Length: 257
Image (tube, rainbow, N blue to C red; front, side, top):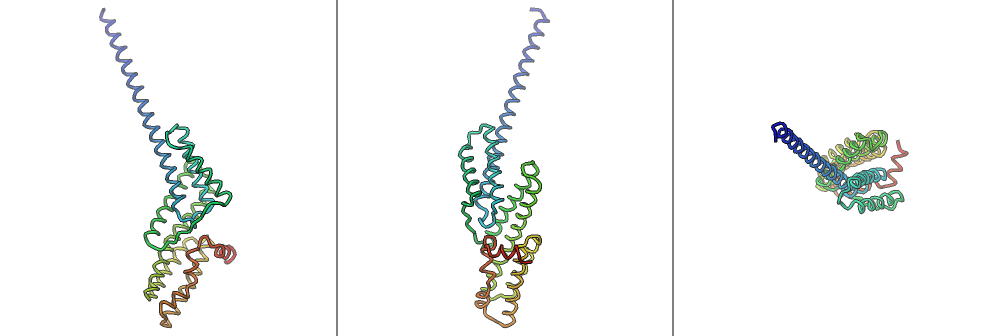
């Protein structure tokens, strides 16, 4: 075998080796990318499901529920196209059933009383995650600008409400301890939080109610009344726990300027 032939054979071997290596790397990159996409969509599905399951029932409007279910359905569609080994069909059937229940108003809505700083902070974290999810859906083109704006505004209102919930909880505790001035201050803070959503009629109704409660406590404080009497006079405290799912509050908010 002459030198030229040897060189050509070696060149062919090197070329074939390079092609094999490149193809192997391409397949590995494709495998890694597919695994990354599957993980991302699985996480997206579980995040949406968690928000739907764990955000207090009184906070989630039908629109928000359908938006979360929509995100779950999108994640399932992506997972199906990627031929993942996850129970996608089961997830799709579950999402379809939940969607039907919401549309037919058969879904259960269990209010959760926000009566501790821990609960308030946890709900706030969930709502912040929901806010980010809606932003991401809008930026990726899966949600139109008008729908995104409406839902983002409402979720921001809910974040303000979680702060107000905490201040109301603290105010009630101060009243029980006969620390009326501190209770008044806490109600002022609650009013300030709700006042941040000035374009929401329900928030403005709450602000008016807080102001009424503050006047009640100021009068009782001036008269030197006992905390038990102050607590019994609080119609607001009884209404606040059902604030978002009380039809009477919503009716007043819709028509009372």
